[in-house]
Length: 279
Length: 340
Image (tube, rainbow over the protein chains, first blue to last red):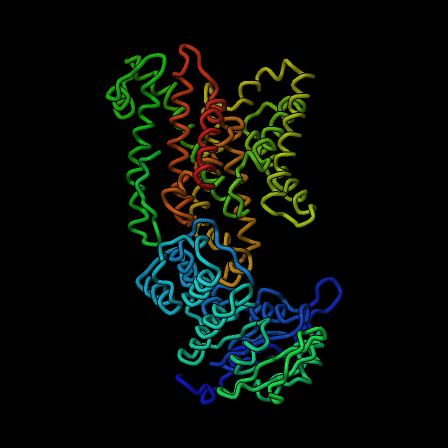
């Protein structure tokens, strides 16, 4: 499962004809989405476009009014929810840990789907928790209370909790929101490592466009409950698309060193500067 | 309370359970002490003798068996029930101030019993627990619906406020009934201050089975409460059916509260204070908080009731008054520790 995920293309998670409505209006309208296995899929779109709703529906938290989500070929909403949790992990937006819960205790909750009334806590649970904390780089403060940590450390704890769940599929709703840029990059590096080195399949809702373009293997752009474009960032992350989807005037530049794309928004009242070419 | 010897339990089960035998030991000691002290002091030896080799010709044995043992058993059951109910409520509502009394369940149960006995003239005690359950459930639902209607929904703050309002309202109605009908109310007056004195132990035949089921259910559901306390979406992602779990937990809390009220009247502060004390020793995982809270609650009520019986001899203070007198400063101290 190392490196090129293209060698293994078995479809694990797929949404077909999904419509989701809150009180009459459709937030999602007949959306199809196939998640490439072993890669990072990133959903972007303006506020209220339905990207979080799509993620929650794919994670069986919301039930679609039409269509279905298939997990390994079976309707996820008809499967036993605990057995789904052994295959698919979800990190919702802005989770809050109960006051005083230690990092280790928080991460240990990720083992819930693997426990039963009779099988409470085993060596495998212990190993999974230690392994998850190791990958997330939080072992050093395992016994500290989660609410004493910084935002970035806290988010790593939540990622570790989902990792301890030991699922191949991991869905994350805006995991980088409210974090410093450096911390955002660290977190995205951690997540990219999960996909590219450990073969996990990730679906992430993101706000930060340049970050999405830099880390997505498969980028999905949404607007008003529809998927407007999907593909590699190279193919679809263009100035025209950003204008079309976000109504944003921006240039898409390539970083001359890495070749990655960067979105540079152009506001009407931005400070004037001397163009590089005129220098 | 410093005898709970489980230093931050963590996730390791052996370490986490290590405080249980200690706490059980304290419980047995508190139980025997509760029986030994009183108007006539008995030695612990006499108490143990009366319990295990009863001789009905010995007067001290008769005191133990007929008068003191039932009251001690009651203290254990009610203390454990209220404390466990409070712990579960704090987890479900993610509200450190949740407790059967603060969220209106206790006064709902008391109100229903008062209405049934004084207005409807019901006297058969078989029905009392069931009436109390209806009252507690009704009050819980009303409190929840009011909190839901508040802009922002059922937050810890709106739940606490609406619980306080409903409690105050029901207490006011109980007072009105009291003023209108002093004769029938005389029987309820002592009961309404909350206490363990002179309770009819045969009531245990009716409330014992549901309380036992609810206590076991509460301990079994406890691991899920920690998951639920991390938020509905996180819990659902981990495979918890949150709606069904909340209904089960509500049933457990209603049964425990209502049966406690039926047995001992409305006792406050136990469900609020004890889970917080337990947290200091076992951390924030309800897997451990819930069983420890049950044991500590039993110890606490035994201790409080012992004080109630010997504080100003030869008279006795109502247990409910002592729980509040000790519970209130203890709670203030806990709040100070947390904010510091």
